[in-house]
Image (tube, rainbow, N blue to C red; front, top):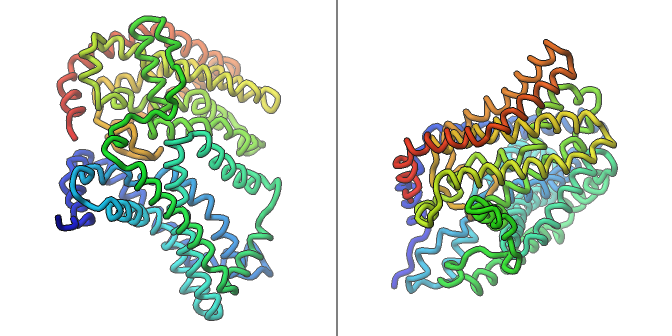
Length: 490
């Protein structure tokens, strides 16, 4: 059989995909966001030399540029891990054909390199190269600068690919790597320690020492070979058909004692822990618990606005992230779910209780902030009930009206499949509602009155959750055929 043109077939698949035109508003928003980032990087690259001279007087511009590039390396790895969608599923159709497995894997790995996140640093470094490096640096330093930029792009792509794949096999391993990277950035950001002097020395040495140029390419090459070996060993029909079960020996049957809704809660918990996309959302949600440590809540950043905003997210980020795709998580097997005797009401009850429980757990994790700033815990306590009522209800209504098919194993915390314009618009009332309640209560009764207003409204809203679930069930029944048809679309 003639070797297929993978690139041409990938382009045809992209062009013929109904998702390209189904969500025009989403496509426009993402295109605008990408254009904005590229333009910002381009302008920054043009003025980067002047900014270095202004903020680091007396320092070597090229050496500081090298320090910033090395500093950007862990940031790029984290950005790619959470945002980049690695093409791990695109070669499934070829597994039944007499096509060389090696050629498929090489295509898979090479394709991952040509993403938006690989080109983004070039918008910053190419203008800087022509404005600062080319006119002022020696020939050796010029080549060294090019080698460092390309080496960082090459190695960070495959390292983040490796961490992403490692999270499928051993979640603790990838978590430890991510924690190390976050710790490095946090210590530098808070000024607890400074790596910049060492990075400046390393950057200058790299530019002037040709022997060092091979280091980032060697790191990326080794990871590339490891990924190639891994895919060649495990990429089979049987392996791809197996369910993701990185917790095969862990029993998650705690809620099944509470009836049919409890069994569905167990299924939802398994999805939270085993789905790659859901786990990415979970990591992002947990990261929000550390926002007060990053912000330090000094006098400039400690106003009511920040307490309300971070209290809302800290006590309910898991519910907000997971709830925005409430029914879409089950879109691949939704018909089967209903055929097993489960009613729409059972499904909505299970969704509500698992999300409300996540709010309570994240609220408990904020209690240690009592020793740092009691106001944080006070606002989180009031806002946790807003999240267990109004915030979850908003996504239940959205799910009853407009849900789309997704693949839960498509990685990336910022993967936009399954999102429509309504998902972006629903965030406005979710954020605005607690502000309106708080400032209304504060205007009438003072600051304590604002907090009590949030608490009373949230508790009352939570008490009537059964009535809201019934209303959402009726709304879903009205739209069930439209939603079911959307779930069946490939």
